[in-house]
Image 1: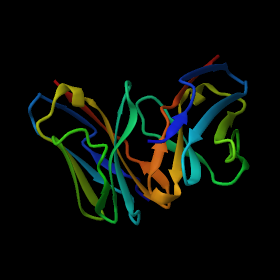
Image 2: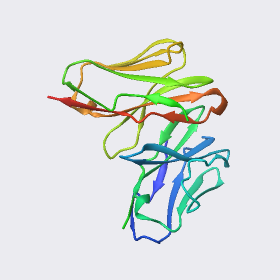
Image 3: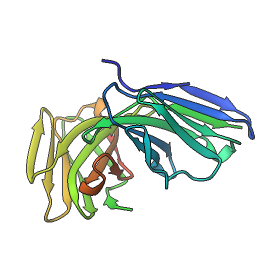
Amino acid sequence: DAGVIQSPRHEVTEMGQEVTLRCKPISGHDYLFWYRQTMMRGLELLIYFNNNVPIDDSGMPEDRFSAKMPNASFSTLKIQPSEPRDSAVYFCASSLQGLQGFGPGTRLTVL
Amino acid sequence: GQNIDQPTEMTATEGAIVQINCTYQTSGFNGLFWYQQHAGEAPTFLSYNVLDGLEEKGRFSSFLSRSKGYSYLLLKELQMKDSASYLCAVRRGSTLGRLYFGRGTQLTVWP
């Protein structure tokens, strides 16, 4: 079975540009999570969905961040406009009954 | 948020045994997870405890005491490849899908 799929794996962009990160969760999982990881702050939960509905977005740092889950097999995290402090690894994870499987992550660098 | 505490760093030598502790304070506790994360990679699931006691999986064991809000991960016969960050995460009954992660313990195994 395929695990969580994320794209792109690496993204380098300039400040002010729009960035879209994509995630395909494991089939049959009913929860989807977006995390951000940095050396300074560790693994932070940004937002999570249950059955495609956003449950808690209190971790989204600012209005520049938005996430959607139009169907059970796809989600996006968008940053517009991007800033250098957004540079981090962004992980998508999905779960069924609590056991979360993580995607490989997207390493974002904003210059 | 939840108070989850782990040591920041630990070191050990190959062949030794190391115990990584995790303490937590949360209401509605509903399970504790350990994840392993190698540098540049995604976290991967190691173990899960919901009842008091020891769960053994090969060289790795995890212990839980719910009354003390305490868990540990025990790694035996350490190998160089065990050098990684170990993340403790707690699940609450009121938010079953979500895990609350600690900052992680960076373990370095020396030859």
